[in-house]
Image: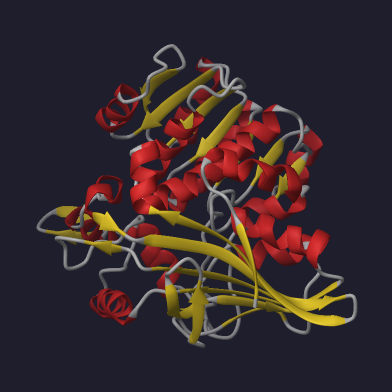
Length: 401
């Protein structure tokens, strides 16, 4: 398989590292706006015949298309912030490639009633083109990171193997990670963090379909495994809520994230000051997006690994019935930062995100996951994915709750 990896930040680096020496990988093109960053990652890979670098502006569909054709790639992997989804997604369609991303096309809040009704939902722009992809015989896998991605696979596994009927599916993410030496240092893209945390969270239920609520609403205490313990989680906008109900039968879907009061306070301050704005403004004759300024002022998450300590947990809580009895389970994966640094030289959050895409590559390359059109991870048989997780260094667990 020949892959064009668009975006070589922290997660892109993890994807490249974890893909090394896989028998199905013939070539991986590491493409980034910062070519020096792509070359930095390429230099640490020990299979030079398999990897090469290119400069790309991911906002330019024609440039992504040209790279795909130049290298004859089979699959375009989008590892960029989701603001670039549509040009990369459309480039894959025009170039006749399989497409994969880890976050769907962006939402827009409802113009009149944003905290009750969705406007443009996550993924709407992509799903509008589903029939065209199907008619062209092309496959697009949307949202195959950790969340969305692995969490969606867990939801499908629960339906297929653990429950007769499901009442609720709730993605729950928490950690005890600490970044030493910084007062505020997000361990993932601040651009994406601002987008998902400050937008109205979306919820799905059988009676009302998709609806929205206020950011950071409905706090709950969730106890995470392997020493992480109890963490307060709040509603956040996330793709699983838009994907899971399409393929898994359930009465309700939510996503809640353990952010912490200090983190939420910073996000609220950014919102209050208008620093969350992604539209450019003029500053002393220069046009710049406030959100990009915030990102530029913060440390790069890709280079925080040696300052990070602790564990992060991603998982899917499911409530329903099995054999007539009430049942609740939490299917999860815990990544320890020290282990990830030792095995991959990548910090835990990006490694835990990137490995899922690599399993996806393998399943597609081997013809196990296949189709025509647009699919979420929960559309496929979850067993082959979960069977591979431990071999990639990320075993899963199941806890009865």
